[in-house]
Image (cartoon, helix red, strand yellow):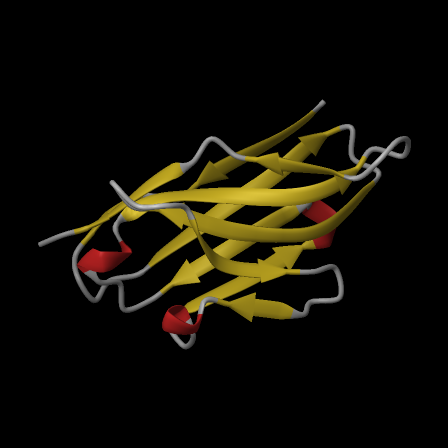
Length: 120
């Protein structure tokens, strides 16, 4: 079994910063792409950023320059540094990871989500 555990969410004022972390644990032989998605109330889940094993990244166009994704392969952990946060960034942020347990197919896993609220 594989688990993704997110942390780092919370309440922040407009213009502030937060750093989210997501650690994968369990039956992990290899970790592929990892990413962050978010879902605001009443809206569909959307891509925030992804990073593959080689460090190549991709961001939602509207977030480029404010958000930075990174990963620590040794810890099977992905991070999201969020700067200049605005109220429209308020959402539940979900971690996603593609993981191979050494047998069978690669599988996609999701974390439980962490709430980010940007408000004065």
